[in-house]
Image (cartoon, rainbow, N blue to C red):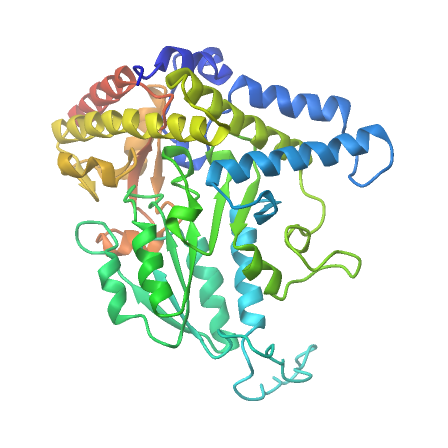
Length: 439
């Protein structure tokens, strides 16, 4: 395996060249895009900025571009078939779509009572599909490690009769799959969990979650939004049932995608116009989404593939190249995580989550911390003045922040790195922290 080609990587990202003095350490909020992605978006807008489904060349090229992107994203996550990939506006919209569909599949418990003045009173009870093995399961397991989007959409089902059970992370900042045993039962419908915390970077063993959930007859919904840019994704190895990502975290423009087992997705009741087929992906791609951003996502996957071929020229297929590239990213980012832990320790920072060097493989280079006696907002403002972009607050994970003993209003500082960041940037970050601590 070749040494990680960091100079080549940085040369692929125009933002790193045009703003060379700035350090992008807020990548968990959205990463920069390589030149090939920007060119793909511009090319689409210039040559085929039309609607799908027409008989003329430009429209047919849009159809081809989307099919090509579906194939690429399918390879990125190791889908069984490209049709298991659906495109849309963002990951949250897919979370809500799936939660609504699951809520609609619940059989009625009792008639709802109309509230006075309700303009839409209940009409009749919904009928569960015959033979649905999950129809009587109303318990949903959520975690307090997750981004709020993968919590709120499930809490909303309580009005449909769902019962929410909480899977809590331990004091080490990790979810432990064995803790599921006391939560799983014949009543469990789904386990909704994150693959990596967008706040403190802890990674979850999804394959072990799936093993335990499936043994209880339940499904697994994975939020892989934060994990997406940090390592290989393999839905077949994970054996999960649904997985969502946001492309803009994986070096593409703003968009989202869903992977799901096709037989499960096809069986779900979803909103669709009458002329739309009741099969995936059509039934899940609600309305017109941003085609040029899907073309950008295709280019982002091809960027990762090209990186893999550069690192491992012997890669025999597109999937093999993607695995080589994302594994190299994971290994390189472990060096960044280790270096960040060193500079934060040197600055006497309190780091939340995994700090042990022998557990680096169980985290991404996303670190939440606080400096002694300094408000997080003051730290981020001071870093911004030194051309370093980080973030402060609750990171859209207020329950996690509360568990850490922090307030939602104040929160912590988060520095989030990806594979185009460097050890030299980490050194400059450490020096900046020391300067801030003096004042």
